[in-house]
Length: 299
Image 1 (spheres, rainbow, N blue to C red):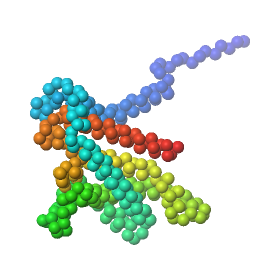
Image 2: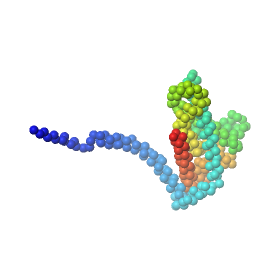
Image 3: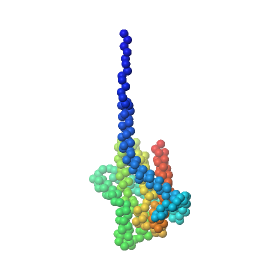
Image 4: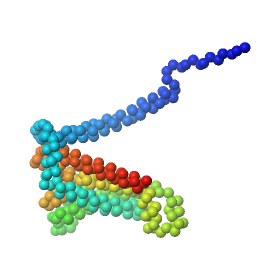
C-alpha cells in the first residue's frame, strides 16, 4: 500500500520573517524621517542657498542681481583683510587648543580620584560652562575696562598681543570645565586592572600616564580636539564684544570678516557667502585630516 503525502497548503501573504523585516524597516524609516527632515531643512537647504548666493551678485537689500561667478571668490581672496584674518584665526586656534586641552586634561586628572573635595572642585570648575559665551564676554569686558574694571588702569585690550591673550583667558575660563568633563568620562572608563598591571610591571606615574592613560583616552582627546578646533575657527562673539577686531584690525577673525561683508557697511551677501564656502571647505579638510590621522594612529 502506497501512502501519498500531500504538501501543506500555502499560507497567503509573505512569510513571517519577511513581514517582520518589513515592519522593522518601516519603524526605522519612521524614526529616521523626522531627523532627516530637520537636517534637510536646517542644513542642506541653507548650504545650497549659500552656494547659490556665492555665485551671484547678491545684495543685502537688492537681492539676486544675476550670476557673477567666480567674482565673489576672487574678491574674497583679494580683500586686504582676508589673509591677516586667516593668519590670526589659525594662530588663535593653535594657542587656544593647546592651552585649553592641556589645562582640561590636568583638571580631569586632578578630580579623577574621589575624595571629600572632589564634588566641590568639579562643580566649581564646571560652573562657568553654564554661562553663555556672549554673557561671559560681556563680563570679561567689564573686568578688562580701565574705567570700571578690577585691574585699574591696565589696558588688557590695547595691543594685539594683550587682546589675544585676554581673549584666550576668557575662552579657557569658559570652556575648561566642559572639556574636563569629556576627558573625565574617558579617564573613568579605563579599567582599574590596567593600572594594576602597569604597577606590577614596575611602571612609574609618568610611564603609566604616557603608555596607558593617553592611548586609552585617545577617543575622548580626539573629540575634544575636533570640537575645540572647530569652535576656534568659528570664533566671533568673544572678539566682536571684546575688541571689535581691533586694535587696527589685528584681532579680526574669518567669521567677523564674513559678518562685515554681509552687514557692516558692505551689504554684500554674495561676498559673505563666498567667504562662508571657503571657511566650510577649510573645516571639512581639517576635520577629515584629523579623522585620518587618528585612524592611522589606532591602526
